[in-house]
Image 1 (cartoon, rainbow, N blue to C red):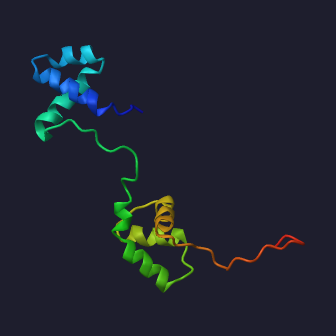
Image 2 (image 1 turned 135 degrees about the vertical axis):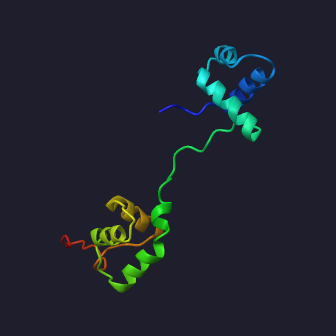
Image 3 (image 1 turned 135 degrees about the horizontal axis):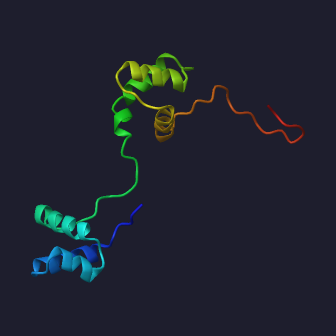
Length: 128
């Protein structure tokens, strides 16, 4: 995966292009790709500055977060519902999601699925 180049470099490339240098010449001078120089120039013209977009993070959780109340209602209605059953109910509603997406929703909201309470550790023998 490509790395994000620093803002200072982006600004210098755009300034060189604004100063009369061609995009190809500026790209060669600053040792960046021609397509990057062209894209940064276009961003500077559209938005005033060629700022990098945020990288990483969760970009898809909004789809399941929109149905958070529905999921919580399912849990309140049927306390021992499984992740697969929740996934099926969401699919019936027109929201195709994976098991991992449902699990990450639970982790984000601090919802645990443990069916029995934890027991104190025994110093004498292992507990089940």
